Length: 136
Image 1: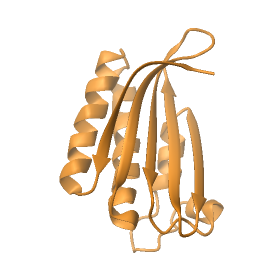
Image 2 (image 1 turned 180 degrees about the vertical axis):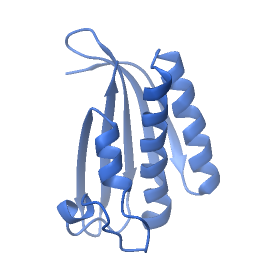
Image 3 (image 1 turned 90 degrees about the vertical axis):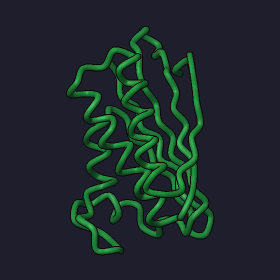
Image 4 (image 1 turned 30 degrees about the vertical axis):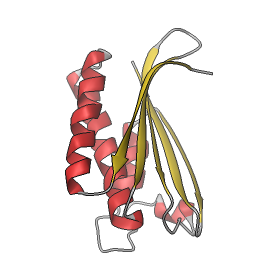
């Protein structure tokens, strides 16, 4: 179980908030000492997941956490949560090219590939929670 060293919650409700989240996530990644490549991966995943909240749920939150793993390694964990319509078939939603709104269908699957850990839970009519972690 990872120990939480610092955390911050941001609201997600518009394209402007997605930009604000990208900036905050990049600042945290820099502060935690991630390489430029990893900063870009984390920011890209955060942007995709925040954009999904805006597009599919309208609003939600992202929790940023600086964590220390059991072996002492440092990480950045992001938890995206919404109370939108939920995802009826999560496995299908994770497949590249699948989109219900005409997008490229790379957001969830791409985010999973960019991060070290990826967990998603979703209930139709209740919402979706995605937790991603990148380790140094």
